[in-house]
Amino acid sequence: MKPFEIQTYLKEKKNLVDKNLDDLLPGKEEFPSQLHQAMRYCLFAGGKRLRPILSLAAAEAVGGDSNSIIREACAIELIHTYTLIHDDLPSMDNDDYRRGCLSTHKVFGEAIAILAGDALLAEAFSVLAGGLENGAHKPEKIVKIIKIVADACGSKGVMGGQVVDLESEGKVIDKDLLDYMHTHKTGRLITASVTLGAILGGGREEKIQRLKEYSTAIGFAFQITDDILDILGSTENLGKEVGSDSKKGKATYPGILGMNKAKKMQKVLFQQAIDALQPFDQKAEPLREIARLIIERNR
Amino acid sequence: MKPFEIQTYLKEKKNLVDKNLDDLLPGKEEFPSQLHQAMRYCLFAGGKRLRPILSLAAAEAVGGDSNSIIREACAIELIHTYTLIHDDLPSMDNDDYRRGCLSTHKVFGEAIAILAGDALLAEAFSVLAGGLENGAHKPEKIVKIIKIVADACGSKGVMGGQVVDLESEGKVIDKDLLDYMHTHKTGRLITASVTLGAILGGGREEKIQRLKEYSTAIGFAFQITDDILDILGSTENLGKEVGSDSKKGKATYPGILGMNKAKKMQKVLFQQAIDALQPFDQKAEPLREIARLIIERNR
Image (cartoon, rainbow over all chains, first blue to last red; front, side, top):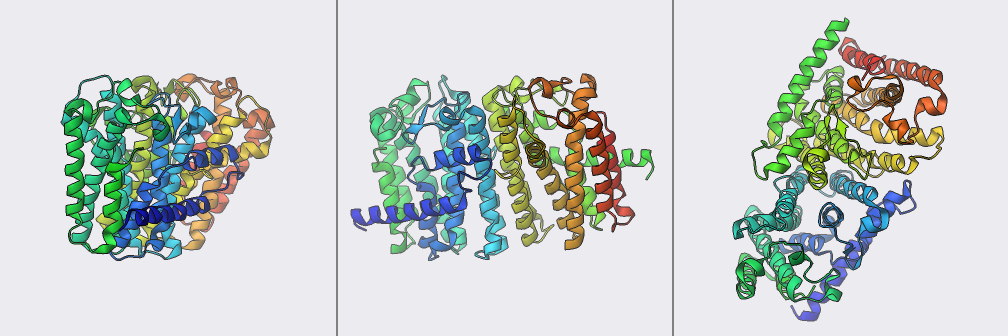
């Protein structure tokens, strides 16, 4: 796959996801409109749609039709957006900017931001369960992916990572705890995205396992890259302040391992991701390119 | 059913729900323990378990086995608890007490309270989807109830009611908006509880519809009773300050209609609930008694 090809692929998929997100969510005039405006505000403030694109690419990698899982891929983006809205709240990370715009609570106030996040999470499960009415997927598979997604969002998933993140602020933590934090806070939803695509795309167990390994590696690489960019990036590219994590006393990989080791780890993880895709043919090429982009991105 | 019999029934079911909630949730020592402690704190701070008991009683009313839906009934209580935790937050209702104890954010701080609520919501869907592994229910039915529960929690359900509640504070609102607020904020989850029980209990469509009518009436009656108790009750019984709603400038039914009309409406709704149960035999007796208790309760 040539560089321009993956860019075209990502752009096409992003447009598909954006269009479907718009169709799935109630219009911003629908009552109660303040809530629907807030839900849409952060969702459409930007975002690369990495997670839903991973779902679509995983479905294609196992030979499935990505068009048949677009709703479910969008559900993942609803969840991702909900975590961002809550993460930015004053009592959490207290971030004024997100995706280059004012964060949701800065525009709508804390209460509406909390409720908009809550509603996005509920909406995601409604969208996933709505697959029954469409007849697009077998009910067994729908229940299976709902379980995977719900567990990824739970106290032993993303929420567990968030709590460790909060508890670790301003403290010296070891690499094990930092690993836990990121495999949960970021990794679990990325793995759920890929697994969802692989299952609904009709992948066999061995392939699903391989894709899980792939997702674990890129989830990790994604976070290390985030940490590196937080030190070396520019505010313009990031859409948030450079150094904002280390300023808050958050542990980072370059901080614990040193920049060189962190960059080496990035490369090892990239190779693990590529190796995990070894049994796949050219249909997995977008996944390979996404792994490359994750470590080469500048925002 | 004699008065002591319904009390015994409620006590037995409450114990069953409490035991199963304890089994379903991760232990408070499990990592990250602060999160699991916070999730359990509000859940086990008290509570009558009205919603899960309604699920169980609805399953029995249609001739089903309530033991086979205990997990799903518990999922509803997880959701109810999540709404209480978020509702009490400083940016929302700012309540220091709940179920007679300090509210979750007073004990664990705002951030953990928000995340504990989030995790309880995710856990509820994990529990509902977990029914597939048990083989207790057909996957079609599981997906169906997940859709009903998710919609009840969404922007056109409980969250919609919450936003209207927030927007209405200190304003004069009409009865239509107050109706919207309560049928959504309180009513939707009560209806979901009853519907879940009726569907999983194997009820036919006509019976399910009747039970929905029943649940709409008691959900409404429940809120009017809340409003009346907020004016006439005692702090000791309520577990929160008397008059706390009207003090916050919240619209109430006695405030809009006058106390006499509000009490009359309570009785009309009770009769609607009883009438909806007309095609049911003595297996619906607990539901009838619960309707009576809802309007006769003093807390």
